[in-house]
Figure (tube, rainbow, N blue to C red):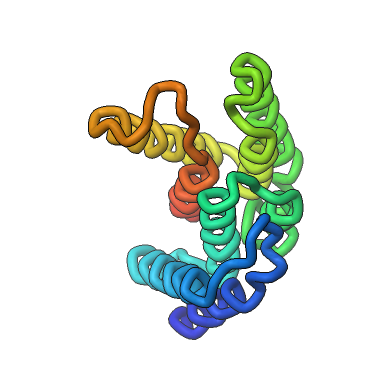
Length: 193
């Protein structure tokens, strides 16, 4: 059952590529890559953790799409931000009784990233700010904190790699969306425990 749901989520993510909202239309190769990534990550989640729920596959699919769109086009479309936040309605996130805490968590992360956005004069994009808040709403406390930490650490390690091997300069920007999406998957694993 888990394999079928993971496969369905991956195929749906790839098939909906024209609706992703990026600046460029993804090629068939990119669509298949996203579908395969969703399928493999969801299968790994279901195989690694017996508490994995089928609707977590949808969250993984959203994260993979955000990662690809931001890496390719340097934008996280509002529709993907809204879908991530609305994922809570599917029953995949915090229970109904914990909505207030989830909203507070998302608002806190949004404000934290907004301050960074303002201090860096746009060095952190507004898409990242909004997506971070949406992850906070979707994951709730404390899973959102684990997601935030994992995403920032992963981005830092990648940036250090780029600097050490002189692939980027200190003043160059990198897309944060893929790392936030990675953190979101870590947050899902944290939340289901």
